[in-house]
Length: 104
Image 1 (cartoon, helix red, strand yellow):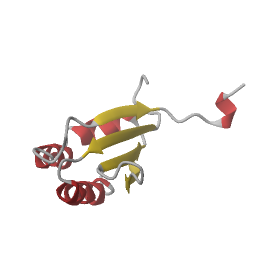
Image 2: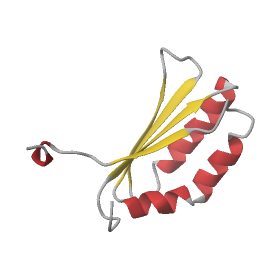
Image 3: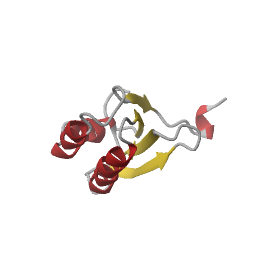
């Protein structure tokens, strides 16, 4: 992931101590993130097998755009608002899209 110009997908898995409180925080975060520069898409989904688990999936135009957003007030405010709502830290992962052309 060098250069910062390739698309990137970020996933956040949250396990809630307060599912309703967390849902409100994450819903606000998703709405605000959709307007961020370089954000291609962001979705919030809830697990049907783990009732207190939420997943945020973000797709960014570049790693640079994602990094700028991660340091933004929107992301910092979300992290602060999660205080006391989670059973532990979220599981965050970065993904690079793979196209059929990349597979030989």
